[in-house]
Amino acid sequence: MAPGERREEGRPIRIGEGWGGIMEKSRDIDSKFAVSIEGKIFKKSNGEIIPDDEPLFLLRGRDMLALQLLGAYHLISKDADCNKYHFQKLAETIGSFKRFRTFHKDRMKMPSITEGK
Image (cartoon, rainbow, N blue to C red; front, top):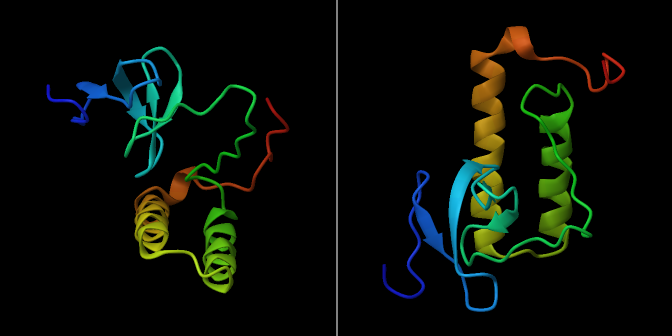
């Protein structure tokens, strides 16, 4: 694999120098991030590992409020004049959430309805 090359679908992904070498992807989170088999979350475009002490916020496809939140984030992003790449990746994420809602209506629910059980 050439320096800087990355591969998808569970094959090794070379990540930037100083980030740890080659990681093997276990699962995609979205179009921008994945989880390695070592449990590290990393940016797929450049292999940057998100530090364990950096807070994250996860929206699940089954969350009935997720699309509204993503829509609000889109509007805030427009006001902030985010770049084309951001909007491309956000559109992919919104599309994934819409498809999930369409094909898995039986799995949709309000957040925390089970109160952690």
